[in-house]
Amino acid sequence: MKYGFVRVGAAVPKLKVANCEYNAAQIVELIKKADKEYVKFLVFPELCITAYSCGDLFHQDALLKEASKQLENILENTKNTDLVAIIGIPLSLNNQLFNCAVVIQSGKILGAVPKTFIPNYSEFYEERWFATGNKALSDTINICGHNVPFGVDILFENRENSDLCFGIEICEDLWVPIPPSSYQCMYGSTLVFNTSASNELIGKYEYRRELVRQQSARCIAGYVYTSSNTNESTTDVVFGGHALISEYGSILSESQRFVDDEQLIYSEIDIQKLINDRRKNTSFMEGVVEKKYRRILFEQSESQSLALVRHVPPHPFVPSDTGNRDVRCKEIFSIQTSALAKRIKHTGLKHAVIGISGGLDSTLALLVTAKTYELLGIPADNIIAITMPGFGTTNATYTNAMELMKAMNVNIREININDACLQHFKDIGHDANIHDVTYENVQARERTQILMDLANKLGGLVIGTGDLSELALGWCTYNGDHMSMYSVNCSIPKTLVKFLVKWVAENMVDKNVKEILDRILDTPISPELLPPSAEGEINQKTEDIVGPYELHDFFLYHMIRYGASPKKIVYLAEKAFDSKYSNEEIKHWLKIFIKRFFIQQFKRSCLPDGPKVGTISLSPRGDWRMPSDAEANVWLRELD
Image 1 (cartoon, rainbow, N blue to C red):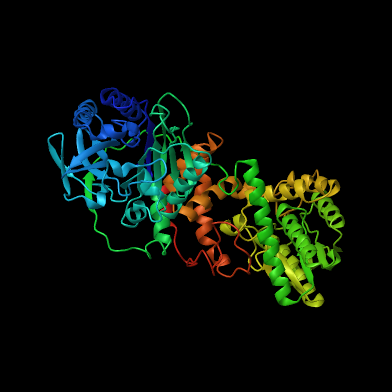
Image 2 (cartoon, rainbow, N blue to C red):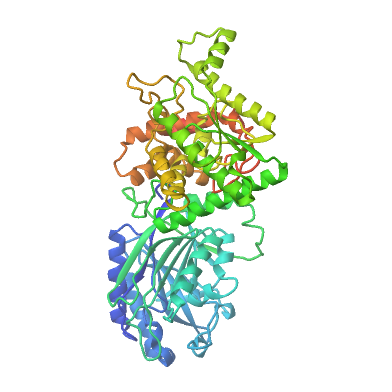
């Protein structure tokens, strides 16, 4: 596996009912086609060698023998590939007939798994022909002259990497309250293959899709499903050829339905990600019951040149689909306002004190605060919005701040911090012409002092404006903008802040406020702690110093959410950003991210309260507990 990825596929072959020779040829063709695409695991539909809809022909010895003969042909014609294929076939054993999936590789049969749950209702009457695998009398079966493992208690495991382990269930097995795959995954299976023949009915498609997606989510697994297509018999029902590849609740690839021709879909499953989340989710193994599984070992070569076909979003915190993004923004905004409302009701404080810079973060915090006061029925005038011009404030940001506060009908205060900072420089013996970290932090702490003291005077709550990206990088002044009495943006990354402000502009405010918000969205991100340029423009752009926030948010997501290694993050970033950044640029900014993330942990160890809104939070009371003196050598060495 390259960086934990393994390519899996689902095949939907053209079939002819009871024509095993024709069906076998289609199966071989698809195996060879998949092998050329570096697919390592390929699942075929239920009973695909014979076709599912043979009816009472399953009682014909001629059909069963021909199916076994054609399985031999498949083995012979695929012996030069180490792709693992899961193929449906009827098998006779101990006076019973079983609906089975055989697992083949390099011309050999690794094992056979019989169907556990046999449907016998509505249009299904499989019990007329097949027995449940639970009633099998033997744990081996002779197929094509070889005794191979047989039973519902089999898992298939890579000899060199036990994390690459898969189980099999057949069609109906997924539709029961506790599918076999639930137990398989608790005993180590990270992949589940379902060989199916699910007919089409009104509404069944959505239900089936959700079953696959939900099972992959519950099991923290990759789930690969395929079903028979329209070439099955249409005597009473129609099959659509539905194939799906799902990973941990996300659909990675899906076939078209009602297509006459063969189909092959494939994508990569991130095994490393699945294992990482299973280890973190301590509830995952709580429901385990005692079962015994036989483990069949297999070996596979690694595809060194594997190029991901799965989509890697460059902005993982932001849904790419506009509809989903709007739903997500609405939900996040509701979480923020609900959280702040609870804190205001609990404290009984009627005033909110918030610093407005004319930048994105303080804008979002003001929008959240204004909406919260509206929901609580508190006048907007109780929001004390303060702009505090300093040495680096430009006319553009000052104008944005003033116009936004006026448009929001809040209580506006303006306090220039220049004289106070100059006095402080004098008190501590600092030359005001030296524009170093002291010069910058004095301004940030002066602003925080004003906010805190005014909140004390008015009996108010200081609303924090800093975001998740700044916390990850430590891009905040300790006990300056780092501190507040309640922080509404603390788990929202910078890339998402922008979309939230844009969503509010398009959905919640009038034309006048929208125009102001649009100008703020177009303003470069800056702390404005250094004097403007000679032209009066912003002279200190954050992304020129620490790097692009879209890269840092990408690094943050994959490192913290899934424990990805530096090498893997670079690999994913190259795919996600598609030449926007060179390999050297990605590594450069990732090194800065790692160094800052470790060095700046002390700031995250004492964060103010604030709501978690997504899967990542750096709160020391919740998701992230890290010693402030941890060293980054392991990560930096791998990156080098």
